[in-house]
Image (cartoon, rainbow, N blue to C red):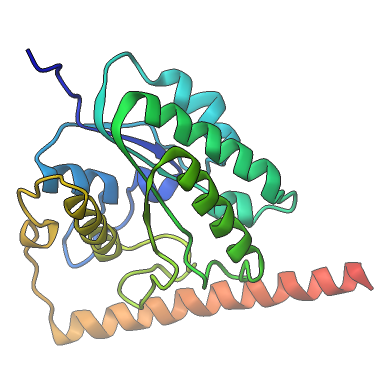
Length: 234
């Protein structure tokens, strides 16, 4: 008898936890949930808003029950790399440990790199560091790596340049489906085929104005933080 598999196990931060505003009437759901729906598999989420790799190890890993999963997903690092106490070596150790945990319980594991244009103020030169750590730990665990370095567009990312919109979550899921399909998993349905929406001229204008306003606020705050940082350094 074939052992029962429990589907998708997801660890990480708010990007994997999902949730947020509607986008053209489409509810914001996690990319990992869309991935599970696309594969026709059950979904077990443990991701928490604001989590760093230490939180994954301390809180999410112990919450995982017994059983074996088809695919384990880990996407974490955006909060780590933007923190004042960013430590690439410590992050890599934690990420390696988390992926090793998933590899023991899942037939396949998947992790993802961080977009290069991350945050406001930008994370800048730190992003290649976190991505190098993610790729190194993925090699050690034999994990699939979803490359999100170039991810980002007006309709895919919120004004903070960190959190995906719903269409962004779907876009990530579509890329993840391509990756796991190439590794042998069967795709049942595309997430983009499961949503229906209509746009209007007024709605697009209102959306553009709202985005411009929020982006201006984020940019102004980022400039102020950078100015304060230079003052402290002087």
